[in-house]
Image (cartoon, rainbow, N blue to C red; front, top):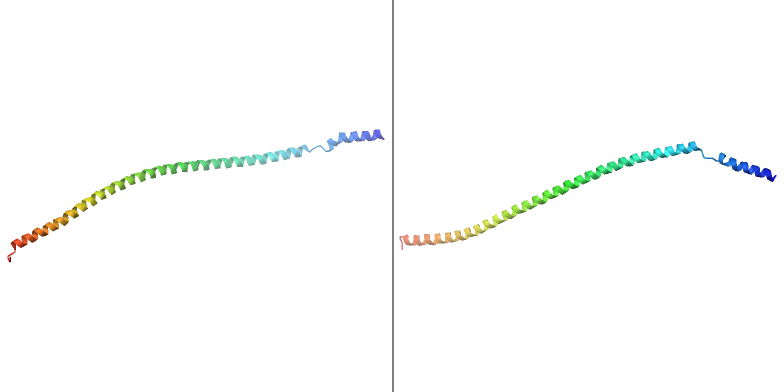
Amino acid sequence: MKRLFAILLAVALIAMPALAAPDYKALYEQAMTDALAWQDKCFELSAEVGRQKALVEDALKLYEDAERDGDLLRAEIGKLTKELEARDSIIEIQAAQLKRLMGTERYAWLITGILGGAIGYVLAPNK
């Protein structure tokens, strides 16, 4: 009996891997399905990386354009500042000339009035 039990146990242990062996075809099909899914995911990620790379290149180009525009604006502001300073100096010169003219005109009117009065007094028939 012990011998029969030992033989049955040996046969069971030998046959067990054959009975419980994995289904290699199913494992292969599952591995292929997983590989195709990963391949599709890689293609999607590659396309996304390409799109992101294009976006980064566009952003860098926009940044360079903005920097160039900023430089142009700074140059334009400098030019306009110089023009304003030139205009301010012209206005200051004109204001100084106007002050001189106004002072001269006041005295000219005063002197003309005094001379006119003196000449009128001298030439007046009813002294």
